[in-house]
Amino acid sequence: MFVTGLKCFKCGTTYEMTPTAYTCPACAGTPGDDGILDVQYDYHALSNIFPDLIKKSGRYDVFRFLPLLPISEPTNVLPVGGTPLVAAPRLAARLGLKSLLLKDETRNPTRCLKDRATAIAVTLATANGYRDMYCASAGNAAISLAGFCANHGLGCHVFVPSEASQTRLNWLRRYGADIHVSTGNYDQAYDEAERAGAENGWYSRNCAFNPFLVEGKKTVAFEMGEQLGWQAPDLIVAPVGDGCTLGAIGKGFRELEAVGLTDEIPQLIGIQSEAIQPLVRRHRGDDSGGDNGNAQAASIAVRRPRNTLRLLSEIRLSNGLMLGVSDEHISSAQRTLAEEAGVVAEFTSAAALAGLIQLAEHESLENKSAVLVITGGRLDSDF
Ligand SMILES: *Cc1c(COP(=O)(O)O)cnc(C)c1O
Ligand SMILES: [Zn+2]
Image (tube, rainbow, N blue to C red; front, side, top):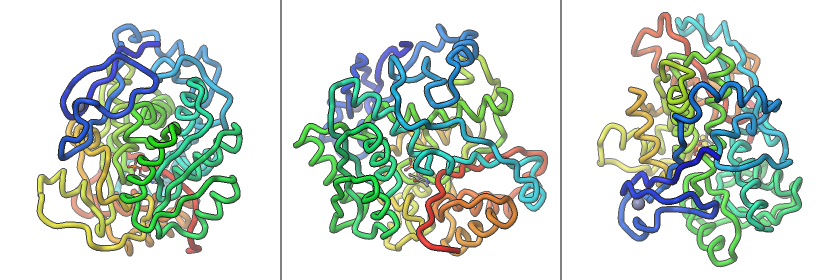
């Protein structure tokens, strides 16, 4: 393994790599952001050899990128990754872009990018002797975990908010998960999951707190880099809830630069729902205002984001920005994606296109290349 250690985003303490590490012990109980640990690697040792190593792996799933993952060997989990970049020339023309590509994560085994993190979680859980796993989720992370646990024969305990849709609960039932419906929102379900996980000694698939799961999500950036001939696009746009997904994409591109594969990193554009946009405010440095509305974009309805420091750091390093969009614009973007690109995204995922359309209204995107991350494809209602 090329892992050199774990570093806390909040206090900067570094720790030795241990497969059961969780949040930073030194930051436990301190107010403000959580002490999220970040996996560090020896990029120098990998420079020049990374492309050969991935080719020699002979794999087209997340384990293709094993040298930059915190695991020593792949496991036989549901195959994740290797998703296509879909060209969207009609949308590119409409927005005045040089090119627009859609990274179609709806093609993963449970129809969502979340599967990339789950693959790593199941690998680490089984390698360390766990028989049960848990997570808190608006739906997709739980469904992903439930599918992988069904395939692997692991106990799966999921904590979902009171407003979880029937569609999502049905998916959880199909996979045979042990379902806990909270009386509150996602943030309450998260606290309940953490408590139950600690009490019962289950393995956590909570992507922000478990430092190894973002490493699975960053493989989406490695794939985009490779599919584009190791050239970063100018812009990458993705919906943001806890901040793990876009934070992971930023890390992935910086790692490609660190091992000498790309010269530039893309500008990251994070999209939240106007009704719940704590990270838009944090990025602006604006403490006023709160989130009292209800957002239809359930998968990013996070009022207390857990991976704030990572996300804000990646946005800053990429010279990126955070935008809030209305449900109305997301709904219209969802139809546009189907009608003008032939891709059916779930409501939350369509926020990425709504954000890009909003950006194009404020600045010229001429001569720019952009990638929208279509994070998931599970429909809660027809459109
Ligand atoms: C979870 C999720 C996101 C946001 O990911 P975070 O890591 O919470 O920022 C975006 N889109 C979909 C479909 C998701 O399920
Ligand atoms: Zn710390």
